[in-house]
Length: 244
Image (cartoon, rainbow, N blue to C red; front, side, top):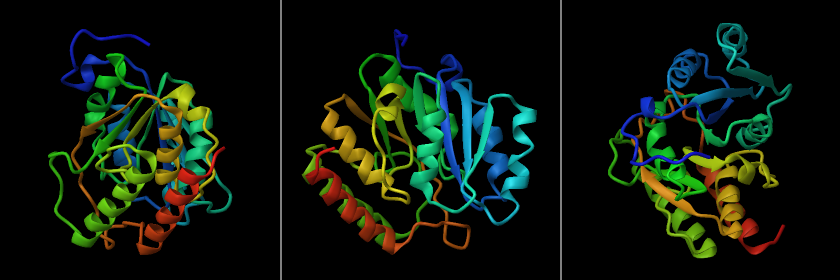
């Protein structure tokens, strides 16, 4: 892992070093756009896409990408198993020194990879979380979603003794050997509290950086719901109070 003398101000200042892992389910309207943006970022070494048995036209669009750009790997689940399961598959295929999670819905901005990579490449961090509550530009949406997020983050912090502001954020960056060394179990959105609890137990260096956020409405395709909040609570308790 290299070091940099100052914090990068853009992705153009960073050599390819990222394995971008992308779980996908029914995103035919955004998938081409998000892949184009991800591949346009200089830090992107490879993009590992796992289609979680999409039932719209997503898979047909995805099949064209490996021929268009050899950095794209495409894998498919023959039955819908959930975001966590798709991430397990994608992370196991990563080869770059750093792994970042990228959703397929354009809620998060790949042009901000440098923000998460800065503390990692400067030798300060092993894991970097983004935060949507750190003053970055964000679309104003659901109040009760933000309340639920803060409650879950607070409970997670109580049990992990971390001081995160956004445990449920998609943008999480890991040193590859760390994330591939963790046994991940959750199949759905419980991946977030599970991985947070397990990383906390490792005693690695964790940083948090503000990012922008362009959230979607349910009419625009947002998938997480209130039931996932109860599942997250279960995962916070389960993975904080039990050992591997």
